Image 1 (cartoon, rainbow, N blue to C red):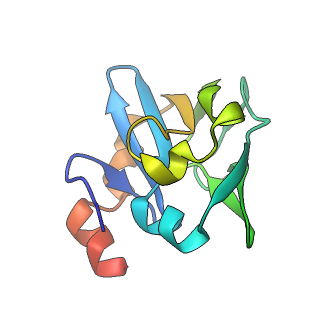
Image 2 (spheres, rainbow, N blue to C red):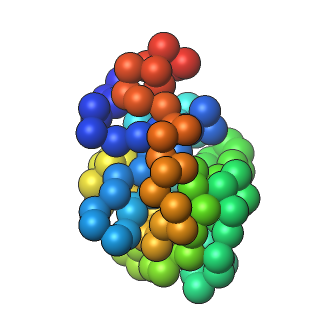
Length: 124
């Protein structure tokens, strides 16, 4: 399983990568492998301010539908439009082209409550 050391993780299998004022969020390599072939990604929260733990969308795979949860509080500023035509990018490149949303974080101190790569590896 690929678990990049520079990212933070949640127990629900989301990752977050902070780049200055914004952060990218997606699901982990482990999560996409457990879901199987992803056929649809739905995010209807663009423009909304959400709390940590709130559902920001869903991922639909051949076998199941899974909710997506905010790792930190913030405003959803962008949905990865490439996933509309190519939802399988989440399977192929979960930490790169398969990112799901971009957010403006309310409080970066919330990142301290997330899992490190080592802690996430221990979880899975």
